[in-house]
Image 1 (cartoon, one colour):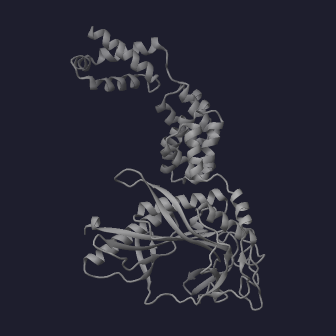
Image 2 (image 1 turned 90 degrees about the vertical axis):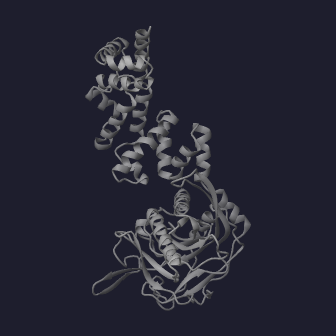
Image 3 (image 1 turned 120 degrees about the vertical axis):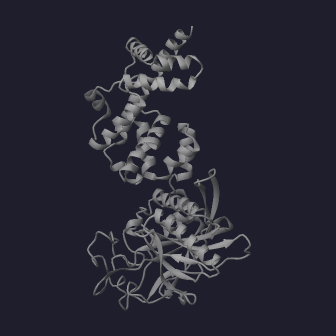
Length: 490
C-alpha cells in the first residue's frame, strides 16, 4: 500500500453546546447532562408535549453570532428556523428545530498552523461553509434490558459548524480542532469539554488518488470524545479506505464509530440512500431579521482571540511565533503564563520553563494542559522558581529537581532549595579547587584534550559538575576549567 499516492479529503461537522442559562426555545434551565439527575431539567417543550410553542433564546442567537464573527463569517440579514424530521427515542417531538437554507452564519474561514511529523510548519486556510443554530437531542444509555433516555440535554442550544472539505490530513484536522475549541473557549460560549459531549467533532472522510478528478465515497465517524481520537480515527479510516481501493474493492457510504480500546473504526450502519429529513420552515417561529447594527454591537463585544493574543505575546514579551502560539492557543494556559510574568518572572524564561519543563511534568502525570490552574505548581510558585534560576541561586538542572518536588508537594521553590541545601555554588575559590582535583584525577583525558581532542571539554565539565553534586554555577565552572586547561597547555 502506497499512501503517497493517496490524499485524505476531510470535512468536519462540529456541534457545540452554548453556555446559556436556559434552553434554545424555552425557559427550562440548562444543567450538566453528566452530573445532574436524569430528567431533572425538563419541561413540556423538552418532552415534546402537544400544544407547546417555542420561543427563541436571544442569548443563543448572540452567542452564535459571536462565533460566526470570530470565524470570519458573514451574518445574513435573514435567518429562519426549519423542522428537520427524523424518528429516534432521544428526539421526543419526532423532529428537531434547526436551520436549513437560511443559517445564522456563512462563508467563513480559520487559518491554522500545522506541524507534521516530517517537514516544516505551514499555514493553511480552512473554509467554513456555515454555522447554524438548532436544539440538542436527549441522551440514550443502553443497558442489557433495553435503553434509558434522559431529556436533560433535549433543547439545549447547539451550534453546528460545518467546514468545506479542505482538510487533507489528520494533523490538519487536529490543528483545526484545537484552534476552534480555543476560539469557543475564549469567547466564553462553550467550555470545550469533549468528554461530556458539550463539544462534538465528526469527520467526514474520503480519499483521493493522484489520478482522480473527483471525490470518492465518504464515511462519517460519530461520537468522538477527544481531539486525540479525531486524529486517531482519521488515520485509521484513511488507511482502511486506501486498502479497500487498492485491493480493487470500494468504500460504502456508512456511519462509523470509534473503538478507543482497539484503536479501530467500527461500521455502525451503511447508508443505502441519502437521509431524507423533509425540511420545511418552522411554522411556530417567525423569520429572524438581524440588523447590521446588532451585528456590529456583537462584534464590539468580542474578546482578544488566540491569533491576537499570539501577536501580543510576540510584541510585548519578545517570544517566538511558535512559543506564542503554544502559550496563546489555550485560554487557561495563556492566563497562567501572564500571571507568571506579572509575578516578576522574565517573560522569555517563563515561556521556556512552562513549555519545556512544566508541560513535560504534566504530560508524564497525565494531566491535561487545560488543568494547569488546578495543579500544585501555581503561577506565583513557578515565577519564584524562574527567578531563582535566572538569579543564579540554582542552576537549570537543580531547578528541574525543585520543579518535580513542587509538583508533588506544592512547596515553595525557595523553601525546597533552603531545606535541601541546593543553592548553587558560585564561589570561585571552592570551584577552582574542585576543577584542579578533577584535572589531576583524569590526567590521561586532559592530555588527549591538550593534544587536540577538544570535544572532551564537555566530559570534563560533566565531571566537575558531578564533583560539585550538580550545584556548581555552570558559567563559573566553564570559565575556570578553560583557564586551568589553558595554563597546562602553556
